[in-house]
Length: 296
Image (tube, rainbow, N blue to C red):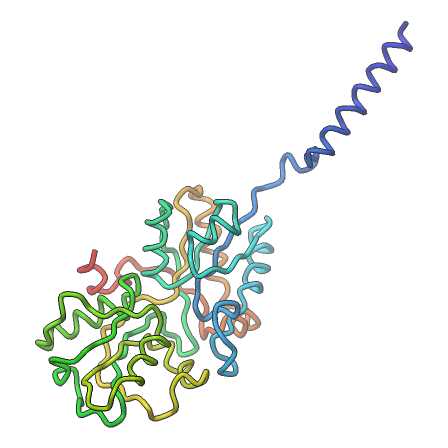
C-alpha cells in the first residue's frame, strides 16, 4: 500500500514539474530580480540617427546597458524608440525603469502615457555641455543679419515638445520685439524645416529653426550644402539629453541607478561609446531653463 502511495506521489510531482516547465516557470527564477528596462530616445544614438558624419551621433547605448547590468547586479534591457508610447506598446510590454532622451520630449511623452519621470542626470556632449540651443537660419543671400530683422518673416518652428525649436526661440523673438503669428508654421524635423526653406522662391522672406546638435547632420547627410544657410539668431540654452527614472521605482533603486550613471565618466571606453566628454552629471534642480519654466 505504501509503495502504491509513493508511486502515486512521485507521479504527481513529475506531472507538476512538467506543467511548470511547460508554462516557462522555473523554481530558480522565483527569486531573480526584475530587469531594469531602459528606453533610449536620444536622437544622437546610433539606431535613431544616421552615420553621415564620422564619429558623430552614433552613441552606443548597448555599452551603457552592459555597464549598468554589472554595476547594479541585475538584468538590464535596452530598447530604442523615438516615442515612449511606441516603446511601451511594441517593445517593453508597458514596462520602463529608465528613459534617456531630449529633456522636453521625454517629459511630454511621459505625460501622454501617464508615466511619472524624475530627472537624475544629464549627459554631456564632446565639449562638456549638457544643453542645446535653437538656431534660427536663413538662406545665404537673405538680407536678415539678426533676430530683429525677422519681423514679417515666415518662420518654420519645431514641435511644441522640442523646447529648443519652439518655446526657447519664440521667447527670444518676443524679447526682440518680433511679433509671432497666431498659428506658427510647424515642421516635425530639422530636415523638413530646412528643406522647405530651401525650396522657397528667392524673394520670400523666411527662416527656419533647427536644433544646434542637428546642424552638422544637415550638411553631412546632404540636406543642405555647406554655406547654403546662415545663423542669424540663437535661443537661450535648454536641457538636452537627460536620464530619467520611473518614479514608481523604490528610493534605493533610484539612488543606485543614479550612482551608476555618475560613474560612467570614470570609464574611457564608455566616454567614447557615448560621445561624451565627462559622462553623466547629477541633475540640478535649476537645470531647467527659464524658458521651459515659463512654458509650464
